[in-house]
Amino acid sequence: MTRRLYLEDAYLRACDATVLRAEGNRVVLDQTVLYAESGGQAADHGVLRWDGGEARAVDSQIEGGGHVGDVSHTLEGGTPPAGARVRVEVDWPRRYGLMRHHTAAHLIAAVVYRDFKAKFTGGQLYPDRARLDVHFDGWDPETPRRVEAAVNAEIAKGHEVRNYDIGREEFERRDLLRTAENLVDPSLERIRLTDIVGLDVQADGGTHVGNVREVGRVLVGKAENKGKGHRRLSYQCVDA
Ligand SMILES: [Zn+2]
Image (tube, rainbow, N blue to C red; front, top):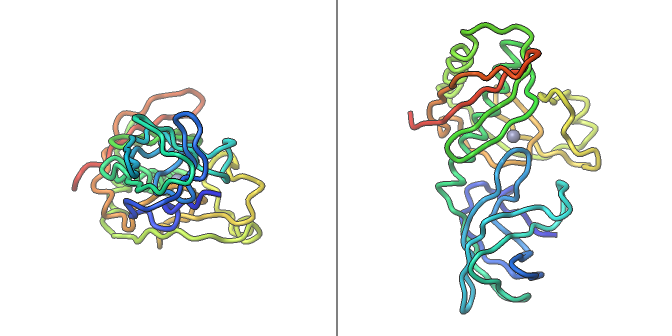
């Protein structure tokens, strides 16, 4: 199974790897720094270089569509043969934007749960913007401003962000779900957590900044009314 180095160190920008399989314009490597699309976080872009060739990685997916399995990279510009040694480099500005917006999503989910008892139902992350779908029981036009102020107040506290695994039994005992629906794969025995130390812990398979200060400043845009208490909050992380 492809070793996903980004789960061990989100700041790793490059690695060496061996091609396990090559088929058409897709390759599976023994290890990779390129994030496979999951949990609303888009796949990384990057470059593969090998003896006599170079290609752009334009998509990465976990084979079979689950949370575990080999990572398949889709390439443009050539395909290295099975057995080849390759250098893999992530498009770092794009990934770092995704990391900032992902950590901001957790901050927003944490404050809407704490301050409004609201749960999020989904979202989508991009390098330069994101949205979070939240179900509110109470809503007034000032809510987006209150969420923005609360999130930026938490950023100013400089919480550390850590990732680690716990067993399923402990996960269920600690009642860590912030989603309206249980999105955690029931087949997983170990659950990976993202811990914004002192604020919030959630199950998560994404990449995050190491300290909330790196998120910058969060600007919450207008909220779209999706009916029956559902609101779509758009936001952007900008340099503070
Ligand atoms: Zn997440």
